[in-house]
Length: 122
Image (cartoon, rainbow, N blue to C red; front, side, top):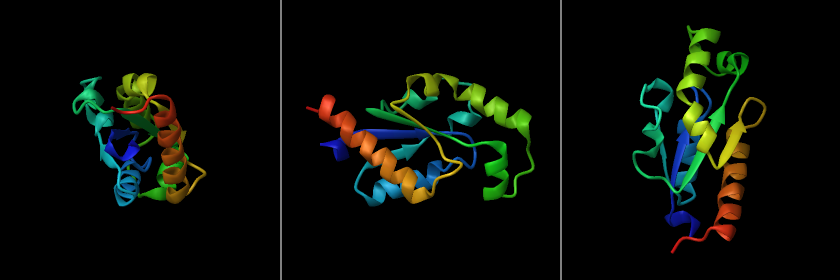
Protein backbone atom coordinates (compact mmCIF):
# COMPACT_ATOMS: atom_id res chain seq x y z
CA UNK A 1 0.00 0.00 0.00
CA UNK A 2 2.82 2.45 0.80
CA UNK A 3 4.00 2.39 -2.79
CA UNK A 4 0.63 3.75 -3.92
CA UNK A 5 0.93 6.91 -1.86
CA UNK A 6 2.30 10.20 -3.19
CA UNK A 7 5.51 11.30 -1.51
CA UNK A 8 6.76 14.89 -1.80
CA UNK A 9 10.36 15.74 -0.90
CA UNK A 10 11.49 19.24 0.05
CA UNK A 11 14.71 20.72 1.38
CA UNK A 12 17.37 23.33 0.75
CA UNK A 13 19.72 23.08 -2.21
CA UNK A 14 22.19 20.18 -1.84
CA UNK A 15 20.15 18.49 0.91
CA UNK A 16 19.65 15.45 -1.34
CA UNK A 17 16.10 15.87 -2.71
CA UNK A 18 16.83 14.62 -6.22
CA UNK A 19 18.89 11.70 -4.98
CA UNK A 20 16.20 10.65 -2.51
CA UNK A 21 13.46 10.89 -5.14
CA UNK A 22 15.56 8.73 -7.49
CA UNK A 23 16.19 6.18 -4.73
CA UNK A 24 12.51 6.07 -3.77
CA UNK A 25 11.43 5.63 -7.41
CA UNK A 26 13.93 2.78 -7.80
CA UNK A 27 12.18 1.11 -4.87
CA UNK A 28 8.80 1.56 -6.57
CA UNK A 29 7.51 4.58 -4.66
CA UNK A 30 5.61 7.47 -6.25
CA UNK A 31 7.90 10.31 -5.19
CA UNK A 32 8.65 13.78 -6.50
CA UNK A 33 10.79 16.72 -5.51
CA UNK A 34 9.36 20.16 -4.83
CA UNK A 35 11.49 23.26 -5.40
CA UNK A 36 9.85 24.86 -2.37
CA UNK A 37 13.12 26.52 -1.35
CA UNK A 38 12.91 28.75 -4.45
CA UNK A 39 9.24 29.68 -4.12
CA UNK A 40 7.43 32.53 -2.40
CA UNK A 41 4.31 30.34 -2.35
CA UNK A 42 4.62 28.81 1.12
CA UNK A 43 2.23 25.94 0.34
CA UNK A 44 3.74 24.92 -3.02
CA UNK A 45 4.52 21.51 -1.50
CA UNK A 46 0.74 20.85 -1.32
CA UNK A 47 0.23 21.33 -5.07
CA UNK A 48 0.10 17.62 -5.95
CA UNK A 49 -1.65 16.70 -2.68
CA UNK A 50 0.98 14.32 -1.25
CA UNK A 51 0.07 11.65 1.28
CA UNK A 52 3.52 11.92 2.87
CA UNK A 53 5.94 14.84 3.11
CA UNK A 54 9.69 14.47 3.64
CA UNK A 55 11.72 17.52 4.67
CA UNK A 56 15.46 17.13 4.26
CA UNK A 57 17.96 19.60 5.66
CA UNK A 58 21.64 20.42 5.29
CA UNK A 59 24.09 22.81 6.94
CA UNK A 60 26.13 25.30 4.94
CA UNK A 61 29.31 23.38 5.73
CA UNK A 62 27.90 20.14 4.33
CA UNK A 63 26.44 21.97 1.32
CA UNK A 64 29.90 23.29 0.44
CA UNK A 65 31.36 19.79 0.70
CA UNK A 66 28.71 18.37 -1.65
CA UNK A 67 28.79 20.98 -4.36
CA UNK A 68 30.73 24.03 -5.44
CA UNK A 69 28.19 26.64 -4.35
CA UNK A 70 28.65 30.39 -4.49
CA UNK A 71 26.07 31.29 -1.87
CA UNK A 72 26.35 31.56 1.88
CA UNK A 73 24.44 31.57 5.14
CA UNK A 74 22.00 34.29 4.02
CA UNK A 75 20.69 32.25 1.09
CA UNK A 76 20.43 29.13 3.24
CA UNK A 77 18.45 31.14 5.80
CA UNK A 78 16.17 32.40 3.02
CA UNK A 79 15.64 28.82 1.83
CA UNK A 80 14.83 27.70 5.37
CA UNK A 81 12.27 30.51 5.58
CA UNK A 82 10.67 29.39 2.30
CA UNK A 83 10.58 25.82 3.66
CA UNK A 84 9.07 26.71 7.05
CA UNK A 85 5.48 25.71 6.22
CA UNK A 86 6.55 22.42 4.66
CA UNK A 87 8.80 21.65 7.61
CA UNK A 88 5.94 22.40 10.03
CA UNK A 89 3.71 19.91 8.19
CA UNK A 90 6.21 17.20 7.26
CA UNK A 91 5.86 13.56 8.25
CA UNK A 92 9.61 13.19 8.58
CA UNK A 93 12.37 15.75 9.05
CA UNK A 94 15.85 14.46 8.30
CA UNK A 95 19.14 16.38 8.42
CA UNK A 96 21.40 14.73 5.83
CA UNK A 97 24.83 16.11 6.79
CA UNK A 98 26.31 12.97 8.31
CA UNK A 99 24.50 10.16 6.52
CA UNK A 100 24.85 8.66 3.05
CA UNK A 101 22.23 8.86 0.33
CA UNK A 102 21.44 5.17 0.87
CA UNK A 103 20.99 5.74 4.61
CA UNK A 104 18.63 8.64 3.86
CA UNK A 105 16.55 6.38 1.61
CA UNK A 106 16.46 3.53 4.14
CA UNK A 107 15.38 5.84 6.97
CA UNK A 108 12.67 7.47 4.86
CA UNK A 109 11.33 4.11 3.63
CA UNK A 110 11.20 2.90 7.25
CA UNK A 111 9.23 6.02 8.20
CA UNK A 112 6.86 5.61 5.25
CA UNK A 113 6.20 1.96 6.11
CA UNK A 114 5.67 2.79 9.79
CA UNK A 115 3.27 5.62 8.83
CA UNK A 116 1.27 3.20 6.68
CA UNK A 117 0.82 0.84 9.62
CA UNK A 118 -1.09 3.58 11.44
CA UNK A 119 -2.66 5.35 8.47
CA UNK A 120 -3.30 2.76 5.73
CA UNK A 121 -4.50 3.94 2.34
CA UNK A 122 -7.87 2.87 1.10
